[in-house]
Image (cartoon, rainbow, N blue to C red; front, side, top):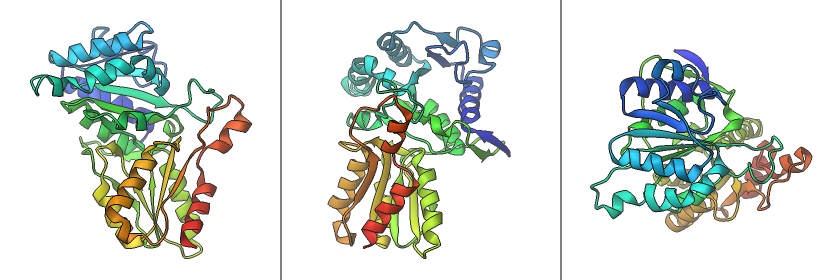
Length: 322
């Protein structure tokens, strides 16, 4: 057992899978210079054939990865930050997501698309999006949004071994956070949520780095006798609706905390599912705590108030308990 950071968990998962399977390789922008530390020592150990810097052409490297995956390789594509997925949208949607269906199951596309989500650091509108909900709309894609280093490693190893394309959205706010990680190998299955804290008064579903805010809110509200059940979906496609429904059947209330924009968000989908399938459980309206529907300003003093935090979660829970 070792206490490791989120970034170390990413690096270890990739390293171990590259050791295990010679078909696994990394490609992307700035991977040779170890921009974020997740490819440290990999070039020395695996060579440039398996740690490949690409031109700054997201559509091109996505197409190359899709082709390599369909002929038996298992590429991991590093886009640096999430909005860099946009130039590759046609390749991701038309080729990566649909090829297995279009070829009647004869083609597999075992590719992992990694994207970092940066917010709260003055990176402005072009670099601050959290677009996992956009890709949730498209069948054929599996989407993971880990909240801690332990889950990051287990989910990444599962993603690399999956025969379907997986998108990994990794929150920069978590990079330095640590988890105890076992020395032995482990995998975390997709579509299985984790109940981070049991409770009976209100269910709080939190995504990615928002789990920490939800747990902080739960700790403070517990001093007033309010017990929150905090659920981390871990993957939003597939989404473990059964665990959320079971929790809401017990608490009768739901707050969803999601740092993406509110409109058409993962929070919106979770709320819709609960209203459709668990309306009779609800004692109060579902409340979403999202980032405001506006482009992210460069100014830190204007940016930071836009995002969910502990205080906003507490306010939402108190409203639903009224």
